[in-house]
Length: 219
Image 1 (spheres, helix red, strand yellow):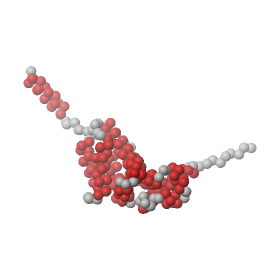
Image 2 (image 1 turned 90 degrees about the vertical axis):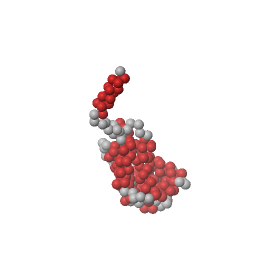
Image 3 (image 1 turned 90 degrees about the horizontal axis):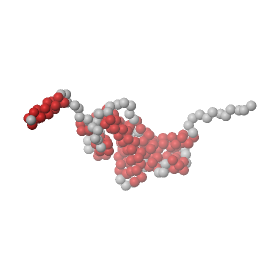
Image 4 (image 1 turned 120 degrees about the vertical axis):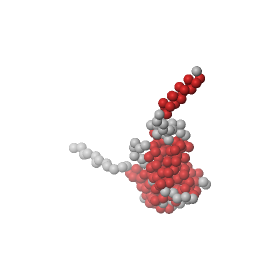
């Protein structure tokens, strides 16, 4: 009589290890920044060897930023079907909330400073932090352009900087308060320039009348 093989449940062991490494990296980043998230500390907290960490990530900057990114993922998650203006306000306010209500604000300031002299950190910031955030926001802009909410000639990269750069400027220099209200006002100011023009009631008829008057005067 043949015996049935036991059914294996749960994620593969390698996935569990990878998740444990990212969780350890994210926790260490939130607790003490990049200086605390060494390969040795990440491996020890995750209960694996350093070779296991290097199996999936080439450097501590890469794994540390990915772990931090996972801890902060809610700050660039949006419900479906939102108008572009509302989605941009939520994205801006959520990142401000992250920076002001958790250790993420001081951590981001430290990472921005370190990135000026450490190409590895600069690359990790671009790939692990800014790339996914900008991808979500860029799709919001594209959808807004497609459905007529926003001007159809926007430069996406420039518009993203226009909307979100003020948040990082206040975070880095602390010259003025950084709060959610400021983030929403910044988006509203940007929308004044990027929103699609609204048709003026009666403008079509008055324009046609003006053209007709011009034609009569020429004749």
